[in-house]
Length: 444
Image (cartoon, rainbow, N blue to C red; front, top):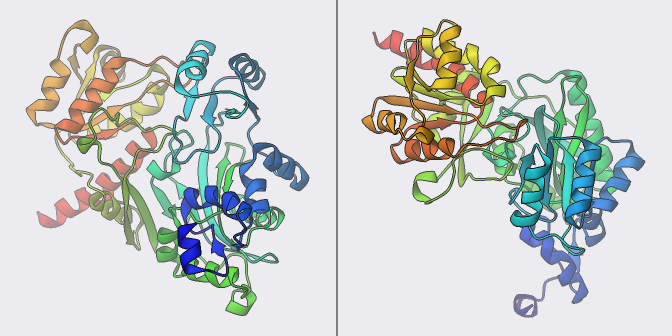
C-alpha cells in the first residue's frame, strides 16, 4: 500500500503480474484500490473450484472428474469413486507444487498425510488422471470478442508440467476438428468468466479426440513471450490496450484465429539440476525448469534441434544409451531403443530391461542393480562414454525404486542427458535421424 499511496494510480492491473498479482487482487480491492481489466469476480470464477465447475456445467464444457477434499478419508473415498490413477494437488498453487500422480490407496494416504496440509481452509484437489495430448492457448478477451493468436501442442503427454514440456507452434498432430473445439471452448470461457485482457487455458485431448479443460489462468502466462514471438502479435500490448478500453476490433483484430505461420516454433525447457543439490531430474506434474529457449525453422525437426541446443541438451549421434524402464513402458519403448541400436549406439541396461531387449533382438550389456549392491551402472556413466540415460518410472502401478533417482543424479553430475519421458525420447530420435546424421553426411 506504500506504493499505492506514493503513485496514486487510477487503478491496478492484476492480470499481467503472474499468480502473485492475482493473489493480491482481492486484498487490494478490500483496501479501496480499483482493479483494472480482469476483476476479482472473474478471478474468483476461474480460481475457485466450485465456481469454476459450475461455470463449466453451464457452458457444457467437460473436465476430468474430480473433487476438492478437506480430510484424508474423503480423499480416499473420492479416489475410489473416480478410479486410479488420480492427480492430486493443493488448491491455489503455482508451478504444480506438490502435484503428483497417485496410483494406489496406500500412496494416496501417504501423500495426504505427509506431502500437503489438508483442512477446511486448505482443500486438496483429487482429479481423474487422463493420459492424452496436452494443448495450450494464450488468448485475449475484451468482454465481447476473443482473440487466439496461436494454439500450442506439447510434445510430452499429460503428467509432465506444461512448463517442463516442449511446446510447438503450430500444432503438429491434432486435427482441425480438435482445433475448432478448442477455439469454441476458449471463446466461451473468456466471455463466461468475464476476462478483460489476457488468459491462458490448458487442455487434454484423449484418444477419441474428446477435449477436456485442465485449468484456466485468468492472467498472462509464461508462454506469452514465446507465442508473441512465434505469431508476430504482441500479446502484452494488445491486452493492455484492451484493459484500457480499446476493443480488439478497434485494434484491427476481427477474427478469433488468424492464419497459422508457415515456420515451426519450438520452446524447450532449460533446467538447472546440476546447480540444485538434491533436485530429482525426473519430469512430473511439479514444475522444475528454470528457463526456456526457442528454436524456429521451416522444418520441424530443425526447429527442435535448435531449441534443444539452445536449452543445453547435448545432442550426440554416437555412444552408449543406458536404459532402465518401468514394466508398463517396455513395449512402447522397444521401437525407440531399437532406433538407437540401429543408429549404432551401444545399449546398457539393468537386468529386467536388458532381458526384455535381448528377447527382441537388441544386443544389450547387462548392468547389475544398485539395490543389489553394485555400482556398475554408475561407473558406466562416470566413465564418460554414455550419451543418454533413458529412465522411466511406473505411473499405473505406483511402484518407484530408489535406483532410478540415484542413476538420474549420477547422470546430471556427469553432464549426461537424462530422458524420463518416452515422448521426449521419440522427438530426440527424430531430430538425431533427420538433422544430426544429415549434417554428418554433409560434413563427410
